[in-house]
Length: 134
Image 1 (tube, rainbow, N blue to C red):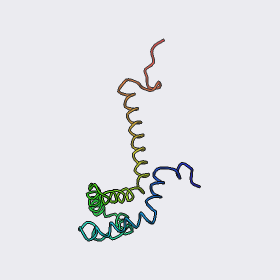
Image 2: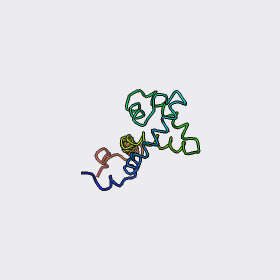
Image 3: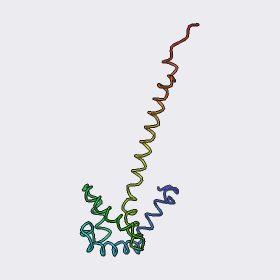
Image 4: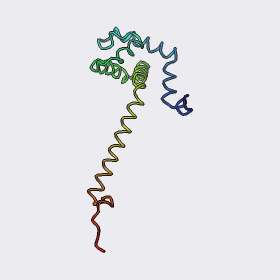
């Protein structure tokens, strides 16, 4: 069962929008046009090809393809907007995992700093403090 907040989350709504057939057709057309213009996108003639490339562990290839798309995204016309949407769509599936890693890292850092702060500020747990004579 899906929670209501997940269904209405901005990420889910954006993913649903970018999966619409008209949007995918626009992505396919743009990628097909760009495939003949440059080496980085030469083997990517449609959205499915892009997904296939990004599903591999060839990270240098990922960088090459995403760089080519980001360079196009810098252009201030409709093609630039489409390139931006393609990059966002390609990266959306990994956002929850990245956010989870960042949150875990922050929690770990906070716990480490809190423990260091106690030691450095003389704030030892009561069991470790010397007892004063009565």
